[in-house]
Structures are given as structure tokens and as C-alpha cells.
Image (tube, rainbow, N blue to C red; front, side, top):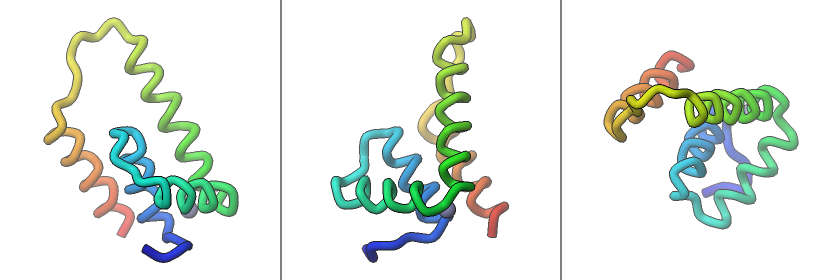
Amino acid sequence: MKASVSCKQAIILLAKKEENKISLLERIILKIHLVICPPCKDYDIQDKMIRNAIKTSPLEYSLTKDEKNVIIKTVIEDNN
Ligand SMILES: [Zn+2]
């Protein structure tokens, strides 16, 4: 993996980070991207807010891994 990533790759790394599947190198690359790319930084902040809201909501339903992957794939394809 190169030292710099596209916004699309950064979003994928953010998703991997949430699932604790990110390597140390990827974590560093992501951190650098978030410093130089305000839109991705905003995405990260909003994503955390949404995740927190979901965690603290009284809803009992949570998405399965497959359902999450479908959403991530759809978002990535819509941004192409
Ligand atoms: Zn970006």
C-alpha cells in the first residue's frame, strides 16, 4: 500500500478500523489522510456520532455483518 490513499480508500480504512481489522501501517496512513483531507475528517466525525447514537439508542436490532457490507459497498459504488 502506498503512503497516500484516495478518499475512497480512506473510507474503506475507516470501516476496517471500526472492525479492528486495520494494520498499524494502515492506521498511520489513515491518520495522515484525515489531517490533509477535511471532507474525510468530517465524514469520520459524523460516522462516530452516528455510531454513538446507534449504540446508545434503545433499539435492539443491529445490522449483521453482511448487511453492513452491503451498505458500505453501496456507498462506495454511489461515490464512483
Ligand atoms: Zn479524503
